[in-house]
Amino acid sequence: MSFHLPSLIAIVASYLIGSLSFAVIVSKSLGMADPRSYGSGNPGATNVLRSGNKGAALATLVLDALKGWLPVFLIHQFGAQWGLGNGVAAVAGLAAFLGHLYPVFFGFQGGKGVATAAGVLLAFNPWLGLATLLTWLIILMVGGMYTYAKVPIGFDVQHLFNLSRNPYDKLGHFFQGLVPALAAREILLRGQYVRGGKMLDFIVCCIALAISATYELIEWWAALAMGQGADDFLGTQGDPWDTQSDMLCALLGALTTVLLLGRWHKRQLNL
Figure 1 (tube, one colour):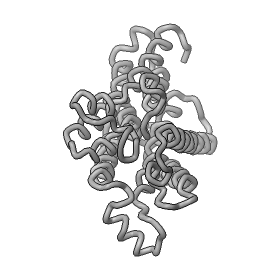
Figure 2: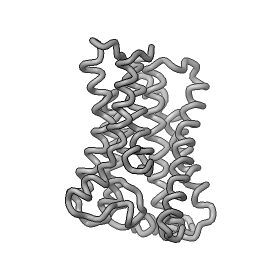
Figure 3: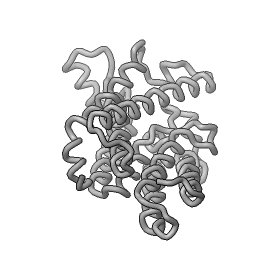
């Protein structure tokens, strides 16, 4: 892939599209509070659902997925005449995902990016992307009805395994590793950036961990900037190792991608 001018324009435009924080845009357009000011403080569909407005939450989810899907779709449909192939489409999808994590229009305070990553997958691999998006929708709906710390099924798991806290939020962090790992694997394979299977798996896990670590840093900075207590804002439930366990769950999600879904994913790509 040569980074000539059309490629650079496509990638920058994809990042700018990804930087549209629809949780904030939809909320403000409906006269609702900024989702960064309540709940988890995360500008995503789950937190918007906690406002009680299901339509706003659904619109946020669809638009967040759409901004990952759209750049890849447009490049596939119209990019050939400009010399834009699968490699540019892959990088454009990554740029849209990074735009969601670090939106230039919203002080680089973004969301977890699961819906946007699923949108990228949807453009490359419709069935895989759709399955991922529907799974995340179920997790979102259950978590948004309460707060992650108060989901009833989480209390059942807590009592069953004699845990000190409600672990439902860990499911979200598991998918925060699994979905970006799938998207990263798709991008690296389609762009032919990495050929060795073991090196591919290692890089995919590193990318998922880097995303998880960066998200934890953003949460910490946001908590400090908003002047809220870490336990209230971050949902640590008094767990001093909450950040580390969040990242461990993201790593387990990434390992699930490379160890359990890797061969099936490769067959889907006809590689």
